[in-house]
Length: 51
Ligand SMILES: [Zn+2]
Image 1 (tube, rainbow, N blue to C red):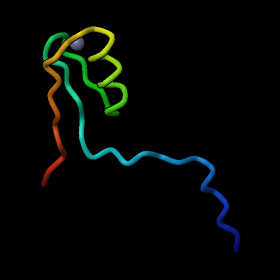
Image 2: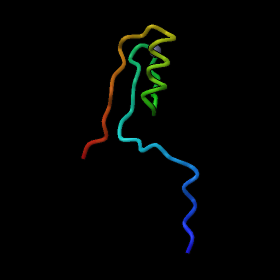
Image 3: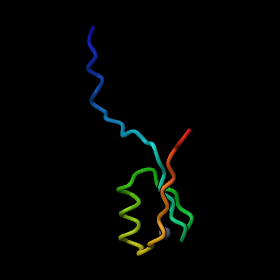
Image 4: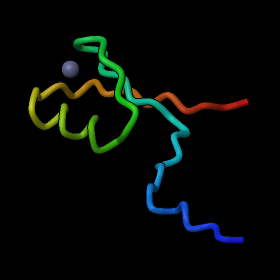
């Protein structure tokens, strides 16, 4: 058996990032940080998936 299908690394998403200024949701913290830096919106909210 060959299991060489690990070429694509999928980042596990356990939380969302939500900008309360422009109501945009980001999946990745890097995207949220980019938006925060680019727009200057400081109200970034983290929403963790909890059970
Ligand atoms: Zn924003």
